[in-house]
Every structure is written in structure tokens, then in C-alpha cells.
Image 1 (cartoon, rainbow, N blue to C red):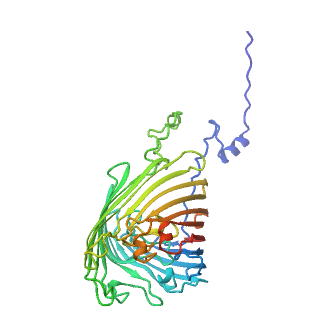
Image 2 (cartoon, helix red, strand yellow):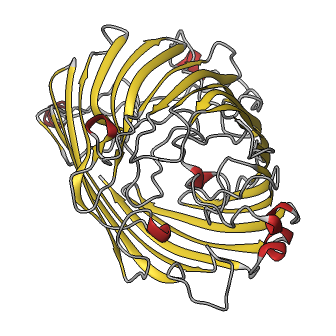
Image 3 (cartoon, rainbow, N blue to C red):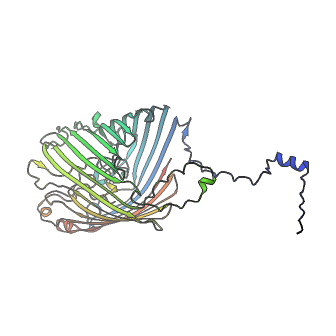
Length: 497
């Protein structure tokens, strides 16, 4: 057998030296460079290591409405037509030390081209509110060091899904409170306690709350509460709360009332965690952790928001409303399923109920009081209903054709819980039709509404949204007067930094 002769090529010293200077290794193939991690988005408005942070929001919305308030196409009401709504916010947060935050935010809200007038709330107008203080508070505490914080001043109060207490951010002015709030937090639960009074938009004056007689009605409003939230049940968030509302009845505020308002709202809310019932198949081991010499597996990824989800809320009220006994309740229940297929469609169903007053002439009020909600999100985008005197089944379908685009269609049916009470709009105060003999004998079916919404976020700081809604007049409208269908369309752009 012939033995093959091998030869080796010697590397000249000059070449070897050059290779060493260049960092070339002859021990084997070079290890691949570590993957480049994307840098987190830096806030261009943050300075001095986060001690000074600005925030800016600009929102412009065009709306077109017809028959939304009178359901009568024979006349052109001031609430019909189209207009532009502009809102600008600028805020400044100062954090000189890690346990102290000082925050102030101004807001300027305007409405152009409308016929509704410029006074907020009159004939459905959102109105003009020249540059004013939206938020201004002092927050003391650092949850990383101690579980208790204190926030004092004008601030947003928002709890749960905002069915009872929220920022009402669709509105061009929104809602804030002059409040004192304590927040206590532990790993799987937290508790808020607060006392507050809602800020009243006043044109063209500085917006004040009842704490400082902002509406000059001497009602002395104090809204307070305790809100407890826990994830002790692993599949859901569970909230328990109690709210209390006090208002004086003086000669300037509801002079026909028989007495003061003092009532409590007791509530329970549950909501499943995203994807908790969806289980991805376990990936087959590929030996990578052994080859890399890792002793622990990589952290488990958050569950995808696929599969079944559910939510529910129940609230009961008792006490006195304007000197009359109040006993009322409201219920929300919903469920959905998100499919793990292209466009990740979610199909959802829900039902909302709130009691109405069956005997308006007696000494007991049975109308559920909607408090300070963000109703636009829940009972149709035309804002025809609040969580009062209603039956409302609904179905929705949401899809995401791509990462930056979502589209949704919602269909609502509306019935009055009782014809002895009125149909309340989203503001919880305005009635669609007066309570008279026609209303008492009318069909309880108010109508149905379909909403189409498309949202596009080309970049993090910009959101574009367009929507169209149609209200199909029901028997209640036909039995009580004009009953034409109503339409609503809008296009909105929001820039956030």
C-alpha cells in the first residue's frame, strides 16, 4: 500500500504578522457576532436622564352628522352638518428625585364650521375651551422602594374599562378631576383610595371644579371611592370597588329637587388575561442550549392574544338621589374568540343592561346613574345611549390585515328597559324624547346601529382613523314622532409624542 505524502505550506512571517494585527485567528472558524438587538425608541422630548420630559398631542377630527339628535330629515337642525374639531395638548413632567414627580398639562380645544354653537354641552356641541389647565399634580412616592404613593391635584381618574369612571377622551375636551389619590401596590394586587370633584369646562374662564365652586351652582360635589384590583385568580383580573357621590341641592342647582344626593355604587369586574386559554404547541428541543453551554432556558414568551376571552361587570347603587331613595343596578357580560389564522379575526358578543325607573311618580328612583364614564367606546359610536334604562345585545368582528392596520364592525340592538323612563343619550342627562303618553305606550325597541371603523398607524407617533355609522330607527321612534334613520362619518388624525 502506497502511503500518500503530505506537504504543508509555511506562512511567511510578514503575512502572519499582518494577520495577527488584523485580528485573524488560526485556531478555527471565527464565532458569529451576537445578534444586534434593536434599540428602544428614544423619547426625543426627554432630557437630563428623564428628569425633564415633555409630551405633546395634536388631534384633528372632521365629523359629518345627520339626524343624530332629532331623527328628522324634514328639518335641518343645528346638530346636522359637518365640522372640524381641533385639540392640542402639551405637558411637562419634572422628576428631580426618584420619589417626586411634578406634572402640568395644558389643553386647547376648538370647533370650526359647525352650527351648534361654541358652548360645551349645548345642543350636543363640544364647544371651544381656550388654552386651560387639563392636568396639574404632585406625585410623591417610588413604588420600587415603597408600596405607597400619593397624587394631589388635577388628574385623570380612569378605572376598569371606564364604564363608570373614565377620561371620556373621544370628547374634544375630555374629563379630569381635582383629586387626592392614594395608591398602594403589591406584586399581585393594588388598591386606590380617592376623593375628587370633576373639573367643569367653562368658556372663556379658567376651568374649576366644585371644590372651588367651578360652576357657581353651590352643589359642593365630592366624588370618592375605593378600587381594588387583583390577579390572584391566574386566568383573570378581578376588580372590586365602591364609589360614593355627594352633591348639595341648593337654590342654584336643581331647585326642584327634594334634597341632597348621597349614594354609593358597589361593583365587581372580571376580565380574562389575553391568550390565557390558548396554548401554543411546545417547540421540539434542538440542542442549541447545550451547544451554547446555557444552563437555563430562555424566558418564556408572553402568550399570544388568541383563543377565548371573557369579561363582565356588575354594579349596584343605593342611597339618595336629589332627596329620593335610589335603588338601581347595571350588568355587562361579553365573550370573544380570536382565531390563529391570517388577519387574526376576533368575533365577540356582549350584552349590556341598566335599570330604568318603572314608577317615576313615587319616592324611589330606579334609574341607574352612569357617573363619569367613557360611553363612546361601548354603546355605539353615534353616542345615542348611556348605561341607563337599556337592553343592548351586540356583536363585533375585528381583523388586522397587517401589523399597522385594524378594521372593525360592530352591530348593536337597543331596547328600553321600561317605557316609564326616558331614553338617555351618552351624556346620561339628555333625553331623546319627552316622557309623555306617546312614549309610555310606544314600542320598547329604539333601533339598531352598525359601526365601521378602520385604524392605520404608519408610525408609533401617528394614528389615522376613519369611521361610518348608521342608526336604523326602531318602533319607539316611530311611535313617538320623527323616525328617520341617522348617519355619522368621521376622519381623525392624532399625533402623539
